[in-house]
Image (cartoon, rainbow, N blue to C red):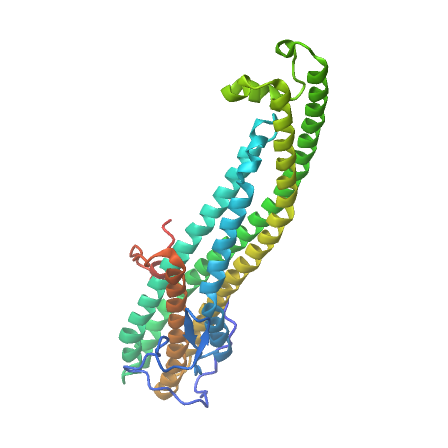
Length: 367
């Protein structure tokens, strides 16, 4: 991940004041804070003095509405599930060459993938915030102590290299949510095509049933009559109650059922289409969050590169101050993200496996 910042020349200084860092970590969940967000979950909008205050503010603002976006997306997934699994559509299972089971399975897989990504991203955000907190409490005080600047710069360099991996992991989450969005839109198209095909087949069955109804009226011996409708034949074969009623009554009931199914199927197309777009928008919001996290890691990487330049301890401390605040802002955003998903019903975050690389620990997905 290339850094968007250009390192300062040795000896250059920065005009902003170094914040007081030791023992001072911003509180993102304070009772008397200036809050912004929905009623259930609010996140503090801070005046950052980090390397990129605008990016930090954008990230915090995006995370502040994550809980609402998650709740909307999950509710919409559930609504689509109810629409496509309407009992009135079960009659379609008896139409040959109409692959209804496959399309229902597709939706279940998309829904499950979305839930899995939510859980993984929550755990990653939670553990990332913990490890950043450890960096701020353990490494930053050391960097701000008097001592050999070269040793401190070497210490920072190891973290800069590992940030590239962090960016890749953030990209992975952004891509995962984008893939969910694409799969949902593809499902919308597939369901639309399925609706057209199903409607044609149902109308054909209605036509056959009506012809069967005419034939029943003309046929004195119902027992010898063969149905042209596949639905009528299957109903007569599989349903004992249907075998006990007259064929005329059976066909009339089927005509009513198939017309209802046809109506429900037609209405489902715009309903699914509308909600697929809603899910696309909400997953798009989550893509933005992880893209901002990726950009924030790039800023931090660039700030570490800046800290590697120069020989003035005073300037070094000033630059480390900006780095620490940028890290604090990211930590707060990750905490907010993890809390938002927990409040949205995903349960408590889980500790991740420990690996050698700092950002493997922060952004480890179990592979």
